[in-house]
Length: 185
Picture (cartoon, rainbow, N blue to C red):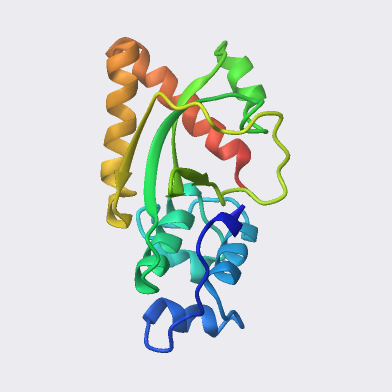
């Protein structure tokens, strides 16, 4: 997946480059593969992408924010994007039982990924075979890595409230949290 991104050697001066170098990695692509292969799961602070390197796991937001920061350090021009997509069992294996329990065909989910020259690069869950790619988005917005916490969550909540109203918000959000738990390590 990451092959569509430019590759550069890690910088001797860069803080993140040094952290990845200590892991035995030497290039941006190697860092992408390393992060992609880490287990899916929220870090203890879901807005702090730096925790991936110490906690050994990450979700879409933290994984892609870390890689966006490394790309910036290496002067590789990529965007960090948050998009709202219809999360189903077909595109997010592991959520089907929760959706069925709540009687939902899908739940609008906020998902982060990298974008380079119009190509989406999703390094969230390694080794998971989905029947469908996450390609259909209701909305997409470029954000900065520091926006993966509150900004991303507010965009997500606002979308649900606007589309379904306050009366359905709580049930959708509760089901969403159970879906995230279901796919976490």
